[in-house]
Length: 249
Image (cartoon, rainbow, N blue to C red; front, side, top):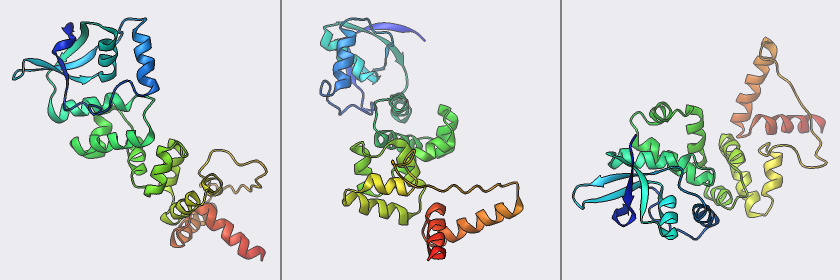
């Protein structure tokens, strides 16, 4: 990999850069990197492609670093020159952004969706090409299947990535209950009751049932409970609670 210094004035943001339409300098992360680069040199070069038609460089990866150095007054920037273009260039930009920690769960989910749509063999292809577990790719995609009300709450940081994935695994009936709870301002309580949140609210009474899959009777009972729960549009915990409630009455 060869790194060369390229004049800042010869670089444009490439169409394949997935964050090309995002303004720079309006959020805390932009200000942080701008402040960092005002004190330290750039450690990771940006990635560009040379465009023969315009005779200019197109920036594929490192938009934030590029703008921060420009604001710093640098006239040249270290860059790796690649020949990637089109879908492959966009995929590289998507993956580089995907591994960032500051993206919201929905941003990551949408990026994974675009990677899957543009990669041969879909989920399997993305998992193989980028070294991601297929289950992880599927979990990110599942967030996009949630009702819009829940997606809005994810965007507003009221639902974490962990919780969003847990909700996506629940039956539609459970998701609808969470939608109603969100509209009534009871989302956190309902997520706790549905077994979505980590831990339990203070004062919550719990009962633990253990099914040992090595025991034929336990395995059969668990399978029957799952089947009955699905027929009633419930998860196993909610179904078992309803059975116990009816029995206790």
